[in-house]
Image 1 (cartoon, rainbow, N blue to C red):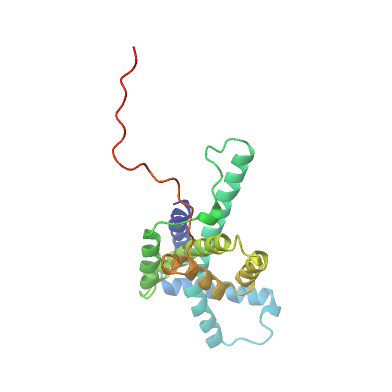
Image 2 (image 1 turned 60 degrees about the vertical axis):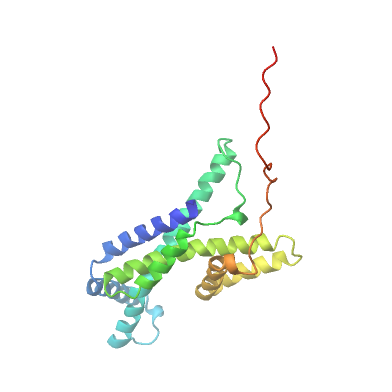
Length: 219
């Protein structure tokens, strides 16, 4: 539940950051263009060849759509790291009220899938609503990346190639982040119908039939 709530908070924070940059798409476009122009003037090595005004507008158009998702992704990652770090510090101090959870067993409520689906569909809206939806889509995508990584960690526990599989997964996330994130998130989203579904051990079965009658206290 904490991971799912973090997705909601990340989407809200990303939307606030977006609003601080501009309340309309043209205003946001102008702000990003001004930042890009300033960076290129300050660091000419960023653009060895001269960028025409048309090319600059095309680059800014891509950034206008990409930045909200980047904000959402960054906010969720920062929040999750802070939660983990706070829990580790609390555990080290001996004040953690609960036993440390099995992070490879993380599951999120099914309503998180609804949030991801609705935000992805809303990205087709025009104007700022579509950009706000993109921020939430990026945030919820990270939630399911966490679930996908948990699945990979869980199902490889008895695999002799576990180390190689995990290193390869994180290497792809680091250097091919966009496509790797989509692939790992897809593992988390499709887990209920996937052959990679985690099978958690079940506890002892409850006793069948009515409970035995209580014995009267002996005098």
